[in-house]
Image 1 (cartoon, rainbow, N blue to C red):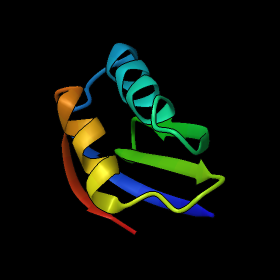
Image 2 (tube, rainbow, N blue to C red; image 1 turned 45 degrees about the vertical axis):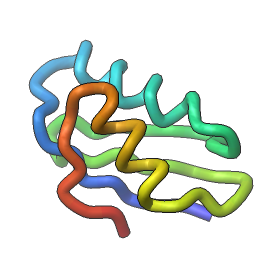
Image 3 (cartoon, rainbow, N blue to C red; image 1 turned 180 degrees about the horizontal axis):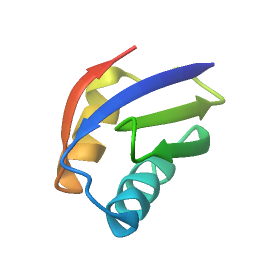
Image 4 (tube, helix red, strand yellow; image 1 turned 90 degrees about the vertical axis):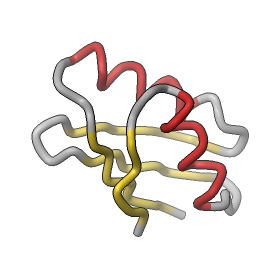
Length: 69
């Protein structure tokens, strides 16, 4: 199960790490890959995780979620 999270506010590799860590800390997340240029985080999950939970994790890290697909 995968979701694409479009993230606004990332500007460097440190931002990428913050978003990766925030998403990786969610229970059920198996893998996270963040593409700075595309402003996209691809999240691979073992279980269904709500969009609200994903959005909250990214926003708590200081970034804005534009949309989740």
